[in-house]
Amino acid sequence: MRKILYALVILTLFSCEEVVDVELETSAPRLVVEASLLFNADTESDLQIIKLSTTAPYFEEEIPAVSGAMVKVTTGSGEEYIFKETGGGIYENSEIVAKPDVNYQLEIVYENELYTATAQFTSTPKLQFVEQDLGGFSGDEYEFKIFYEDPEETENFYLFRYLNDQVYLQIYTDEFTNGNQTFAFFNDEDASPGDLVQFEIQGISEGFYEYLFILRSQSGDNNGGPFQTQPSIVRGNIVNQTNPDNFPFGYFRLSEVNILNYEVE
Image (cartoon, helix red, strand yellow):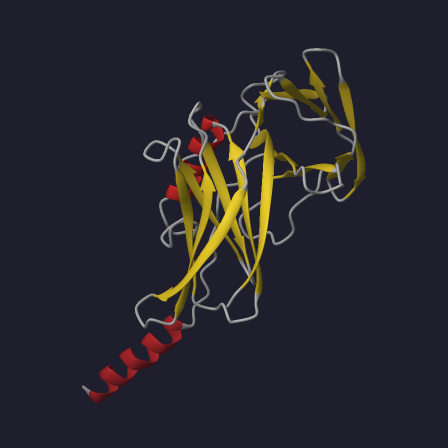
């Protein structure tokens, strides 16, 4: 009996060290487009960047950059802005001007396929001031309220960013705050007095708000592992006109940005 138990223990130990090879299905690479054109009236830089890459197998660490694409943005009134490749999948233009109520069309030609998207420039209110407090479970977690005045005449959607050692994002709609002074809320347990942090507000379209809402709902702790149920495919507003089945990932937008720098007290 002892020999049998000993043999079972040895078998169990060796079983724990067995290497499991996980074979995941792979598909042809798809184009990934990062085309958020951000305009800040308080800065002198007009440089806009579009980043192109492709999808890669799950266990690949490097993101493949796209080279040799043709990238431009045109308007209904005839302006054309060529984005020049600078390396690493980065395409730049410093001449594009954002105007309200103008349709901007992104055109990308990559591997003989045409990708397009259309968007309008979305404005944003200015950030006014910050209120700081301590809270959280232990009472020593920094809490920030960032105030702004929401315009009454339009339905608005916003993307907020808080930048310290890390970047935190929030998305808001003015459904319950239209036309009022209101605030975005962030908490940071790692903040310390004297930290120089940055708050940022971006005006976004309803379509981009819904796109981010879906991405946020799929980004919990239970998603993303190879043994978890995979989330549904989230497609943006970019369409492959040549081969619709070979659709890309990403979003094209033009947003006004306002930034408020703040020293933690």
